[in-house]
Image (tube, rainbow, N blue to C red; front, side, top):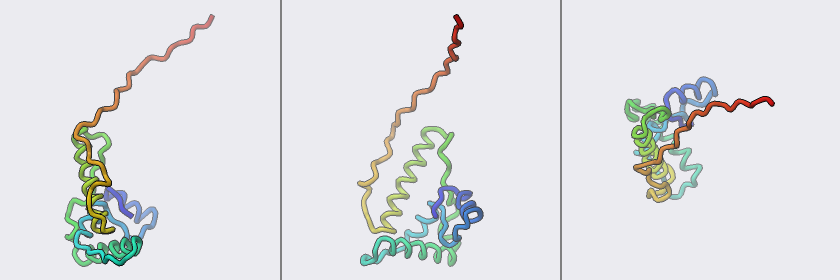
Length: 134
């Protein structure tokens, strides 16, 4: 189980009874699998399971291996600039995750984050029309 925020990971372990060994934050997992070398002959599922086992063993052996700031900030309610920065980090981590776990290199599959995203139009509040009774 991979969660963006540390609170999501804790809830998965406590409320959903996810195995702590197989539960990570997104940043934490990517940082841990940076040292993982995938065997070319392994199948996709087998390679992913081996990567999870590797990350869990590294985390157990060296708790500082994943760094201190492992949670991703929630983009909701933040400025457009902050949302773009979070989206760019998620994109970069996703590319790195796929490269280390599945052996797929290149970022062609994910389009780049646009620098200027058009804002949604602001909804204008309109008073309700009252029906005239005739």
